[in-house]
Amino acid sequence: MHIVDGVLSNPVLISSAGLTLLGVAVGLRKIEGDDIPKVGVFSAAFFIASLVHIPVGPSSVHLILNGLIGITLGWAAFPALLIALLLQAIFFGFGGLIVLGANTLNIALPAVLVYYLYAPLIRRSKTKLAAIWGFAAGSSAIALTTVFVGFSLALSGEEFLIAAKLAFVTHIPVMLVEGFFTAAAVLLLYQVKPQILMGEPRLSTLPSEPKAHL
Amino acid sequence: MKSTATGMLFAMTLLITTHTLAHNIIGFVYTEGWEIEGEIGFSDGQLAPPNALVEVFDPDGKKLGETRTKTNGTFHYTATSVIAHHFKANLGSGHAIELILEAQALPDAPSSRDKSALNTAPTTSLHTDSAGNLNEDQLKQLISEAVSRQVTPLRRDLINYQNQAKWHDVLGGIGYILGIFGLAAWLTARKQKEKP
Image (cartoon, rainbow over all chains, first blue to last red):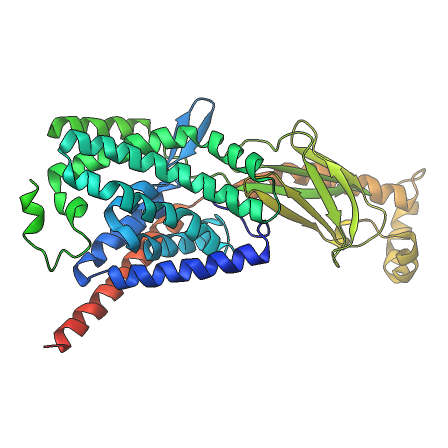
């Protein structure tokens, strides 16, 4: 899921870096003081997730968690993922510094889209249904990311359908695993800390709102 | 309901193994005389697909030639001049790698050997002592081949080791994240305190 340095063309790199900056700016505006620890925890979770390998058949996949990050953080996914991806590039050599903008965009934009698609549904639903929406959010975030990765590669000269199809097909196990993981996380959050799912990221101004959904 | 959630999470953790590896593309090149051998694969042990294109460039970006990977993820190229060789491979889906072979790794070209005549003076005496029917060049080549054969597995191990995420990296990364967000929380808290 991490594109490495030297694959994407300059126009793609520059424009995705620009879009990422925009996303980060919006994200930073949306973060209220009380949300900062939450954003930090999910940033750290993403940082770790790609090291956790889940065996699927002969190969293994690693979690990406952008669906879960999307439904919990919304636009704040941009700054959270930028920091995590930067540290992954520095510490583990995943991706690279030049493609940081493109990688952040490809992972954070699906998170934001998933937030608009599924967060209202999850907030409205009862526990079990919310978990099903969580599954959908987790897997569709991965699907969207593969499409975006395919798109970035296509704009840099690779054949879009081949690139996107390859990314999509190899990530079908990730979509399933990610879906189950997100569903489990939504179930757990519903039990122990529903505010994380409920809060329009403005917990400080609406302290009583989450209770109404219980 | 609570038990369902915890049960699911428990099942998840059972599935999870703690391989500290990710799907990074790694590779290395080495020489045996004029023959350059290379290996490309993924850090989880997967090999590069056979017949993947590997392009060879000189340091200025001029294309020298190309080769393709064999079934075991290795490729082969015969150098023709003593310059740094840049091997570029793109395995698709954003997996690309550039391997650089420095000029020093190649044997001295016939033209450059005259310049290093000073260095060869002591070794010629050695050659007459020990290896009666081998000339100096052959001996040099044998030694370098033997050394590279011994060093190759070490090199592979070293690269695999370098590409493993270490616990201190993981902990360091988490520390940075907590630090950054802690700083942000402190700054916003201070701003809010100043406001009223």
